[in-house]
Image 1: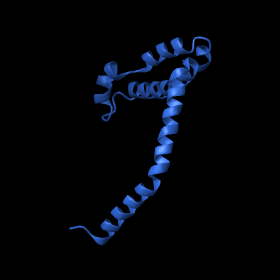
Image 2 (image 1 turned 90 degrees about the vertical axis):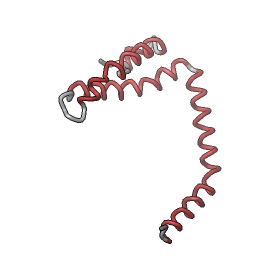
Image 3 (image 1 turned 90 degrees about the horizontal axis):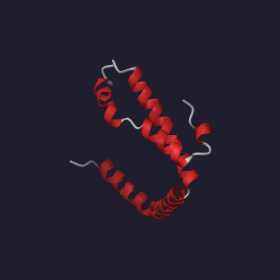
Image 4 (image 1 turned 45 degrees about the horizontal axis):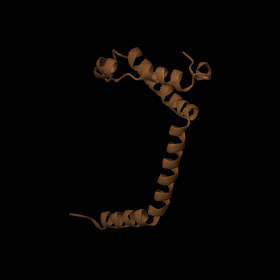
Length: 106
């Protein structure tokens, strides 16, 4: 059975969705435009993927460091399949030939 509070919340969320739809559409358009610009500029794209490189490198290093932890043993076994650090390094070398040395810090 649905309580009055749950009905009010649904109504409120529907109203919020309705009133913010235009803002969200505009925001989506801006983000998509930025993605197009990023993909079109080799150096800008390289800088964008450099952020992901550091995140993946850190995650993979921590998984290797704590591979004996019960929560990570199953992930560690999959690491050769799911690791991305090497791919990011190759991409960074390709997209950021001139400034690779400044972004890549082993």
